[in-house]
Length: 352
Image (cartoon, rainbow, N blue to C red):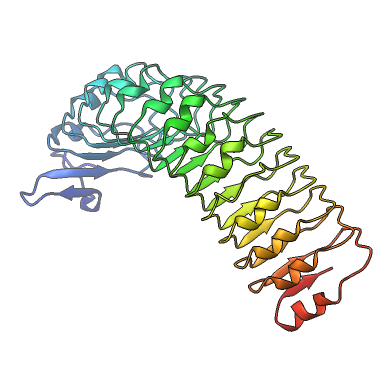
């Protein structure tokens, strides 16, 4: 980023101005700078500042002087700490610190009570600061790709957290029961951790639409799992699940159920209640049989049963009117039922 002799910016495309001609947005993202331009200090009406993807391992304390800032992006700067002056940015709504080297989040972070979106992903965090409950407006929290061993209890006291909670690629062995108080949360990602169980009140996540829990160590799901009536996608692959909850019929809006690479031996009859299910992936499990109720999945388009222990198929599969692909490879079927030909004749791809 070059400056002329008067300290003005050459690249007007990096500036955003309001109707009065005042600079309210400034970005030097990927600009190759190694210092914050001194002339930045003259922008007293700045609301958006993006310094991301530069060589700025130390930030000046003067950043805290921009009291009008609503959005601050400091991604991929290799910073290990933040200047304490940033605690004075009382109106900050978006703070992104993605892909840095922070070993701890500043203790004053909960003082930024206007935050809506907080991104702490891809750092070296081992804990989160106390008092997160103060962030009453926070709707998106990304703490993925860190070294967190636990989540704070008060994470369930964030009333506005309804869009996204990312906590993937950490070292979590459990999540607090208070998490299930987030009754408006729509997206939860806790993949690639070391979870062995989920809270019994997991069904409290009543608005959840997409759930990603793959690559953990779960052996079972709580019985309240079937209460997630808004759930559309459940990504549960790469765990150690042996069974599913008996009562699944409450998952009336579920479209995708991905259970590959588990140890599931049986499916409950209630799986027939998943009336909107389109994709069911059960490959690499230990299923010996399928319930007849599977024939009630009238919206099912893809059924993957590869590498199980199936010796026979229920005739109910022939009744699936929407089925486009049925994968039966690497099972031990005694014989192939004649209705497989009928499925193929109507356009379904059958792999045996």
